[in-house]
Image 1 (cartoon, rainbow, N blue to C red):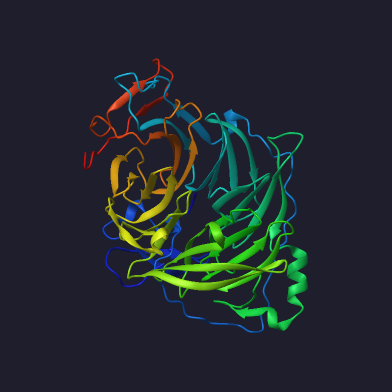
Image 2 (tube, rainbow, N blue to C red):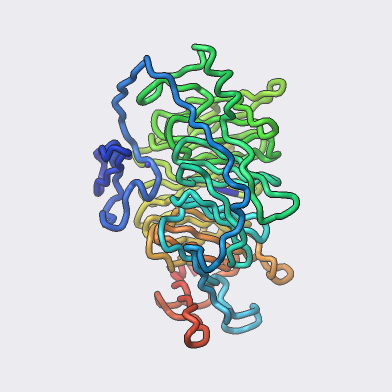
Length: 468
């Protein structure tokens, strides 16, 4: 299951610029080198205070979009800005003495732009970047793609035959796979819909104060930071830097609610079972919301605050059984709570030197990606969480993670395929097992190289064994 600008807090200051090249937000990332990371790259908000200069005479604008050309479905591999690098000589089985439970299987490298979002569904991988394109991959090869008219792709979720993408321009776009050709994706809507927007704009009470102008409550007026589907996939949640999250009914794309959730940007949101929703914000808090059905609509009620801290909340994740809630923050720490103990604080995981940017769960594993370029693999036991290994192949901050079961795993073996997207412009593909690593490898050790002249090779990750 899945999962910023600033104050005068510890660390270096980075500026995020608007279209007029005016510095509007500042971000701090401890001792991170300014040349290798900027707030606009990481796309998270740390605590910030805005000055609100409102022009009440300006009505909100609704950008209309024509449907993109449906013929944009596949890109010739030779013309694609992506290239694939993969390892063809992996240890095949656990019986082999050279078997490594956590291994880098390959890379998808893009010539321009950063990877901001990932979603995996079966044998397909969806990647979102600042190019406005969503690429679809199958067996480490480009399968198809589709393009939005505007808006960096910050979040992707998949529900049935629909794909939802959240963008920097504050819009959620809805795509559908063609029944005749699975490589063709057509945009079937934008949230909010144009009809709902026009209808809502007729009533003055539907307007709310925004940072620069009055806005309709059904429309986000800042970047979408996170998307999540309810367990039954009937409701879509969108979190935004405008300090709200909104609830959409999937069947008719109607906005049911807009909740003013936090005092600062909402960086992350995850929906869980029994109608619980968790939100994390740049204001340093994690809040719990409870959904109640009211007729065909919903009503969300604030339940409790799990934590209120100095550092911004940057990532949330809930395990499949919804028994543990994990929270990553800008100080590099992961906290967790146990639902079976009335959401009491279960502990703190310290494995990163810089901000945790993404979290994902897989079976008894938790994966945390960080601005320190590493991915910690944590294993949950009855008594504790232990760091099994640290995956180190990226050369930039790890921005997003996606996980799928390994279809080639042996009987009784709990093994996963993990995708990690980074600001180094690549997606790494890992095979990760719940079996602890048996050896420690030095950083950068070469695992295998394909025949001379192919140019395809990968370096094995280094493993840091802890508590073994």
